[in-house]
Amino acid sequence: MSDNKPQAAPSAAPAPAAPAATPTGNGNGNGKRKRMLTTLAAALVVAGVGYGLYWGLYGRWFESTDDAYVQGNVVQVTPQVAGTVVAIRADDTQLVTSGQPVIELDRADARVALEQAEAALAQTVRQVRTLYSNTSAFTATMAMRESDLAKAKDDLARRKQIAGTGAVSQEEISHAQTAVQAAQSALEAAKEQLQGNRVLTEQTTLERHPNVLQAAAKVREAYLAYARTSLPASVTGYVAKRSVQVGQRVAPGTPLMAIVPLDQLWVDANFKEVQVRHMRVGQPVELVADVYGSSVTYHGKVVGFSAGTGSAFSLLPAQNATGNWIKVVQRLPVRVSLDPKELKDHPLRVGLSMEAKVDIHDEGGQSLATAPAASPLQTTVYDQAGKDADQVIASIIAANAGRGGATAPAAANVPAASAPRTSQPAPKV
Image 1 (tube, one colour):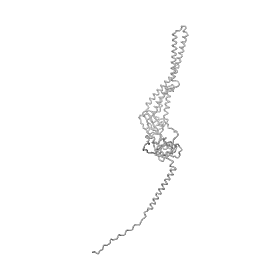
Image 2: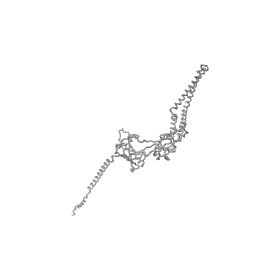
Image 3: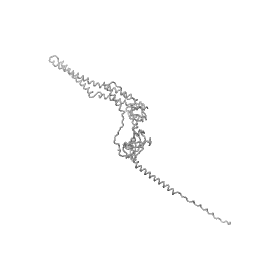
Image 4: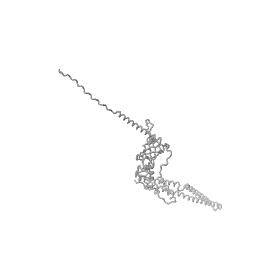
């Protein structure tokens, strides 16, 4: 046996010493987080206090909306008579003045009708003039018949006086009686003629005679139809939406173009129904147009509130009496006037977007407008045609009543198609 003894396993090496613990910094991290939360909370409190002060001192006195748009009068140019377009004297974007001809229709048919009416009036005046002349003639005839009757009666009386002497036969007396009856009948006929003529002429003058008035009305109608072949601009403004073409046959009432007076604009601001609670007529409004930005501020006033919401006047109003009804906040159009000077300095166009802010500090005004419009929209460009027609009628009557010379045709008095009725020349197309 070997005397080598089994040797014991070598002892394990000593474990290395654990590294010294280092601080993790959790204390500093928690402090930093707390400071951030505290700062954020303080900022929120300050912001809340600031907003509360802003709302209490300023914000609650104003109502604003960006659902606002520029509106204006879009004046349609429509013919009053049928005809064929022969000239267009204004086009889109061009400025036209009130009374300036913008469209011309063919005048041939209207001229013929006017000349026929003039001739009929002249003939009627001459016929009525004859009626007045007949009165004098019938009066003279009646006087002559009275004289004939008196003579016939004298003849009969003389014959009766000498009938007893036998100088006059009974037949002669009978003839004398017949002559008296004939003279009496002739006198009665003359009286009837005079009376019948007086019925046609008494209590009136030649100018006011019904026949003359009827013929004059025909002339006036034909003259107006002739004058209306020239379509004037009803207002001063800019042409838009021209749809008519040369050679087109148009009917009365057909829209041919529109004229927009850009000095008569306003803003329709659509506020939520909860925003108009404190709004009143006359409250000041500040407006900003998207086309100019915040660099230009318009100042206006509330002039009225719409009689209903936008949905109430829609083509298909909402049907709320259903089981699946959902409440939707409605918007009420509020009309805002604009300062004419500001509008002139910075022109707007119909349909542009606006932002409106109403100052509701003063609630002393009315919720609804109580006074009628101070200056209703109107035009006088059509008045002159009627006055010219009256002058033409008077001249025709005077010429055919023996009180004046020959008159020119009425068509010559109508302004020429190429000559505008204002001092400003018509723009060329």
